Image (tube, rainbow, N blue to C red; front, top):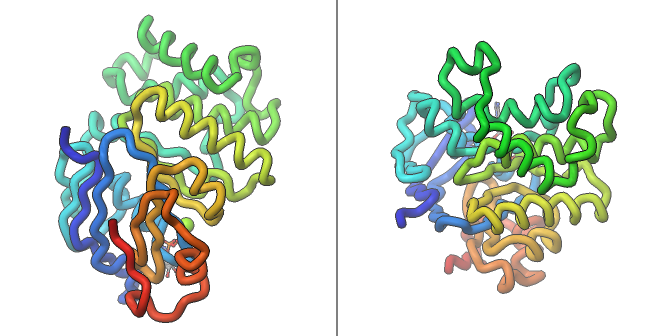
Length: 256
Ligand SMILES: Nc1ncnc2c1ncn2[C@@H]1O[C@H](COP(=O)(O)OP(=O)(O)O)[C@@H](O)[C@H]1O
Ligand SMILES: [Mg+2]
């Protein structure tokens, strides 16, 4: 099977300042990869590239077997294959939990069906499975502005699962949560992804949690990959170098 993500020599600048520099990265099907790095390291930029939302980049990029072309948005079908869990959840407050999760199905429908709200059996089954797997079945009819922040986060995850993507991207999905909730949410995302064979790439500031839930950790610093290692091989030195080291490339650079 071809790689879920294959990036070679990707670079991107914002107003002449490098946000990604010569990034090469391969992610295998079903693999769970964390992007670790300080603020400004380039994590969000890399995730928007993978999601087809970044303009003006250089290099070669393939996601789920399709080449990304600079300046061309991915097709609707390709968009459906990649699920994105946004930090701010992006839910519709006045809709029920069920309706918000059903929104994850829109990419699977023909335009007229989505306009008329014609969901079929398969759509309802995908939504029910997602609600069950995220522990939300009892809240299905509740409006999303009448549930807690933690429950809203689970709705965002359920919506992404209902989409039945082949790859899930998440930008710092647990950075606003206390340690216990962060652990629960990462366990939920990665557990469901493993059960369903979905690859995950998420960014994080939490090395220990990342190590527990990921297969691989990619350390980004100033737009460059400083290390790319199996999660179990990450040491305190890697982390120190990532957050406190001097120039990237000077000294430690582990790629395995
Ligand atoms: N929309 C933008 N306009 C200008 N510069 C940006 C923009 N987004 C990010 N940057 C810059 O690009 C670099 C990488 O940012 P980002 O990918 O957001 O890092 P991270 O997600 O790791 O915090 C930083 O120097 C940041 O200031
Ligand atoms: Mg970011």
